[in-house]
Length: 511
RNA sequence: GGUCCUGUGGCCGAGUGGCUAGGCAGAGCUCUGCAAAAGCUCGUACAGCGGUUCGAAUCCGCUCGGGACCUCCA
Image 1 (cartoon, rainbow, N blue to C red):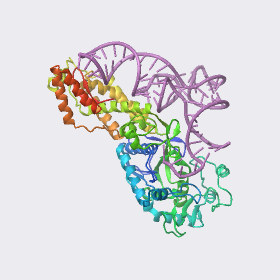
Image 2 (cartoon, rainbow, N blue to C red):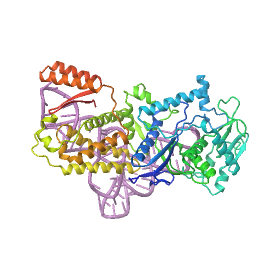
Image 3 (cartoon, rainbow, N blue to C red):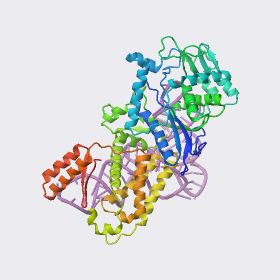
Image 4 (cartoon, rainbow, N blue to C red):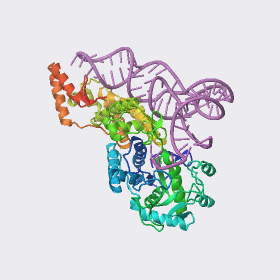
């Protein structure tokens, strides 16, 4: 609210100033996973985009209701009637109840997101929990002449929808005639009036595991319908933001627009946002191409594509280093670079959090705070203070510019420079003034932890480490260098390193 | 085939009609028991060819390369 946020709206194909329907409230819906398998790293990128948006909107004063669904109805693998539903297929394969499959992969999804420090959405509704709403929606569309029954299935009537003055294809930029000529369905074999009509209710074969009673016989809801019903129920007939991966633009989101418009008489979404794909060697990461890997495999480093393990926060940082609308290419070299950069950032975070402002007169004498500084007189370095203010402002401008986290992170590194200088007494807090120092500390911590969701990853106990450091100092003072080296090895074994400087000895994350 | 996106230095990745992105890697200096870290300095860019312009890597055209969607996919 207190920041002019601009977002790229896929519907209008341009950046627009974000103005919610009824500030300070914001309604945001994001298509969640179909829980028939483990989420892979590519899936995670989309959710990270909207986690970042959720955090930023909240930070700038909006009250956000963030709805992210769980698709727990199996949808068809293929387009034809003989297609198997994905959850049902897994259930048969593993000899489990479909709901066991759903539970297992929902748990996995939640666990992965928690490891990556995602905030939980306000509501996480399931498709099976909204069957009544979906059946009502189908009835409603039939009543309005926008859908028709055929052999126990119900299809959305695109020709009628367009005849009513709508434009099916406006989100994805598709032209109906072109779609028609490209369709692979054979004439005469379909239950549909128009090959482009999509199912909103699907007749189920007896062996189909997940099926429910309906006015059109036993069946299950069409894939696109759940999002329309759940977003309408929790966010209203029209709401602010709808997000998802690029690959959902067509047909899924196009269908949502058609259904929402058909049922509620209004365009359901004001800002459509789509995040781009994670690629591997330039190709989209996907299960069918076999180039995907699981977050778990990334964290453990046990996948042929991975040269080593990368921590959850390294992965988060890596993905935030690019803007969400660009494709991001995965590579070990890039991940290694991110790992080092992330650790540098965390060392800065650790330093600044432990540091308090010291007025000039105290800094002069130095003794009582354990600093041996002999700064004769400290005056405020206006140039540095101005630079800090500029970086803070640039951070906000970057975030306001369609969530440009890449540029935002660059500002963090500008600030990090001053933190490191403070740490080494190349700069004393007093030279930034209380205001300048306070701004540096507050913003660096807020940006890193709250907005980007980057946290320190550490298991070792602080007290143990500080005890070890005391020993280190003692051995060093008595020049017992072999023991000094032993302590260094102890830290090294935990991916930590001792920083032994003129004025200070401390530990840090090994970079 | 149709629709659309994209091509930045060793690697990843921003951005813009003229002003240092940033990170990783590399070189030098300072500091240091040895290291490490940090700070400072430095190098190598905008696929190719035309055009518009006082000026383009940034706009336009063409060529070549890569990709996405059109089928479930974040």
